[in-house]
Length: 70
Image 1 (cartoon, one colour):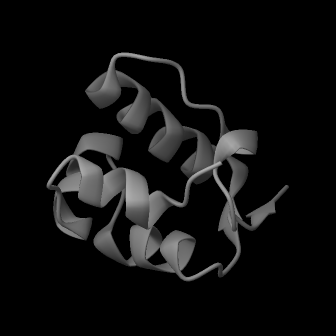
Image 2 (cartoon, one colour):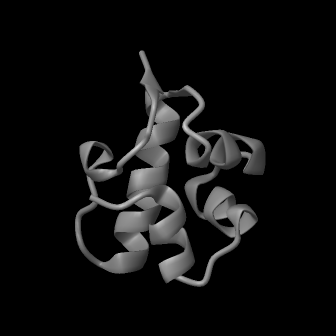
């Protein structure tokens, strides 16, 4: 498993770029990266943005340290 930070940095993206790709705010990405609770929809949007960038499926459950609230 990888963290959001590792995946994001592997792409050379800033938090703002990941937020733009996921259609979220940079603050939401910051919270997710810091292990603060984020909504399930936000976590899914992050996973989908990373999936699109890497060209392979990245699931929310495969992102270490992500704290999802339902």
